[in-house]
Length: 132
Image 1 (cartoon, rainbow, N blue to C red):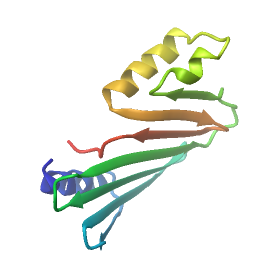
Image 2 (tube, helix red, strand yellow):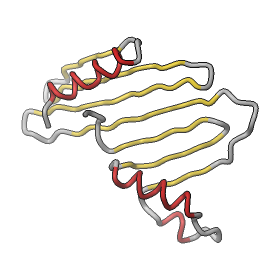
Image 3 (cartoon, rainbow, N blue to C red):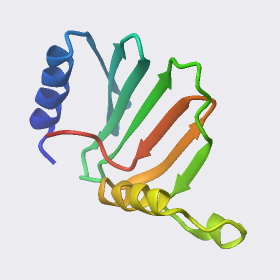
């Protein structure tokens, strides 16, 4: 994992969207916690991209990204929950639609943990930090 590439990607993303990158770094003795946060606003949505990267001296790095988007619309969007594990779906009587299967496949490609759409708020959690 190239930490400089991650820093560059988040900075370029913020600059491209003409917004501010909030970066914090905390030294916790055996690990350094780096957090990235970018907020985007438009007439249709408000979105927050947040990423956390834990750098350890012994190479046991962990990272995650969470994307939270609130849609500003009068139309009520249908609720949806897709997780990486299909255990919760085994007990569900409803089968996944083709759209849900496609979203689940994309989520898996992105190393996603879960995708939830509830009350016009879309939340996506990834088991990796986003970088280009």
